[in-house]
Image 1 (cartoon, rainbow, N blue to C red):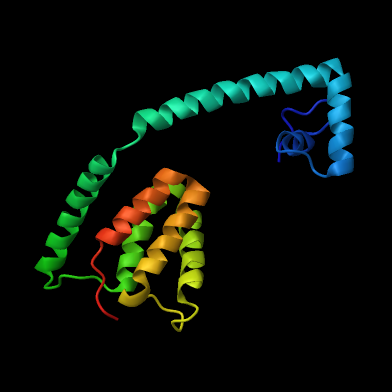
Image 2 (tube, rainbow, N blue to C red; image 1 turned 180 degrees about the horizontal axis):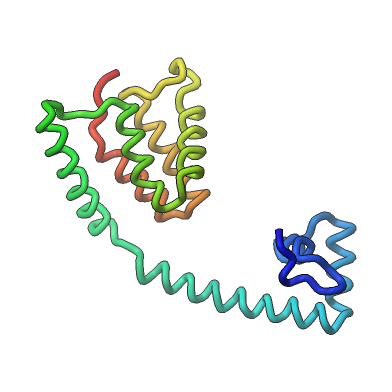
Length: 177
């Protein structure tokens, strides 16, 4: 990690830890006391706090501006899945296997959270959903998988991503396995 915002008192890593709530009771309290008593560090901490407040406000406005209503999200997913169904019908099928549906969901969320996060989140949802089912997702535990995947996406990538997974997952027709 680069220490672009380090000063002679603390490294960038120490500042990040401090801004996240402190590394530990003793070190965190020592740094807090130092920041309260050092004009340079106190000024830096105050400016970071002001920037954080501005960015949080702007991010909130951006989220509100880009938030889709349930109806708009459903319309978008309906259109997407209609096109997928047309392609599947041309191939002579009406449903996807659970494995195929999981791949479709992964492709859906990768642009939102990246390949690694999408894969890790799906893997964890699979482990949570299949312990009593010999390690595989079927039509019988699809709802549990979608609920777990949606909850994990919401905790990792935000509620909008969780909502998208939930709605998309329940739109997919999964074949008996």
